[in-house]
Image 1: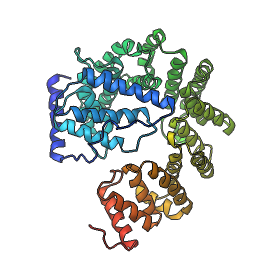
Image 2: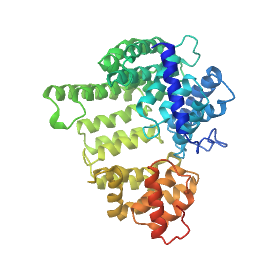
Image 3: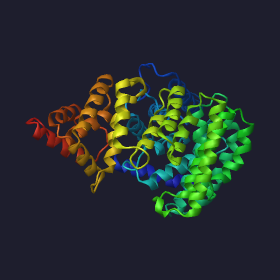
Image 4: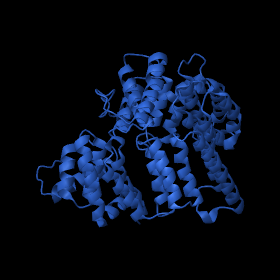
Length: 483
């Protein structure tokens, strides 16, 4: 893709955002004033991403301008906290980062990292896919430039993600001329791989993400996940990345490769050959990940991936829980481990609603707020409501909370304590208000809606939020509620 075409596409994105008058209700968020204590693995991971994105990233290599510098730093800091899975995040980081990134775009910032962060933070509610695609392409085009000084790990990530997005965009006819660019960006990403892996202090998560993107872009660009992964294997083997982590990313890739063979449809739609390849690749992944764990019993990621194996192979509860305990022992703040166990326990796999709820209530009882674990009980209910029969997602929410008073008791127990600890969280307070309304707890809903006013997190369509707020005020007998 030529520079002129990228710049024209970029200008279109800016113009559309300017015309839409994108708001910035969260844009003041930036570096936190104080740094509370975090579990050691979480602290280390966040420190790494702040160094990669900010200290060694934007501060040293970014395109600076007083018109957007403050907003760029705020966007990147919030994105770092999201990517690192910071256990002390309020839930508002994506919205704050998105609004700060939007301020950069309106100032016509064309920095590769800022474009990438904007693309990552804007969801489909805030920006159509075709516009996000242009941001990804603009970021990749600039990351491929010879004079780009961003760290190789970051440039490679931007390039591989851009390559995959470009290939997908070409197939969907969003930007048909991107097919050639996708190959160029994947090639450039491979050229940067030795330097990207040379950082001995790189977070394991960064390495895992990079190889996940290599596999995904290979599937999109080359039509086979292992084409680029096979080319990357000897580079990985020569790198300072530990043998355990090398095996972990290989095992993870084999899991994805197994699903490539099976497909994403119902079991009845899978061909005999699809099942054969799926089972062979899952078994290969199991052996690889077990070896990774034996080499390093502190490798939480290997244990987390084994939870996926347990689900795929229908392992016993005891076997699954053994890997869960190992993952949590290695990383007490691992949300991925909790999600892996909950996935196994879903009724559509090997568990039940009662087992999921018992696990969630156990996490609340344990009270490990510094790792955000009690919040998972709320997530359990949002997982279970998807089994409700209704025409829309919000219909499922209303049906589930309307007929499960025990769900309200759980949500209230979690959020009353959480919002004492993090009263500034708009994301969780917005969710609490809506659950209270769906549960018919009108007095509590009204209190939370009044606390939020128009400063709510954009979790729900504005018209739905305002109608529920109005209904809560009416049902609670509050005559002061405005339009």
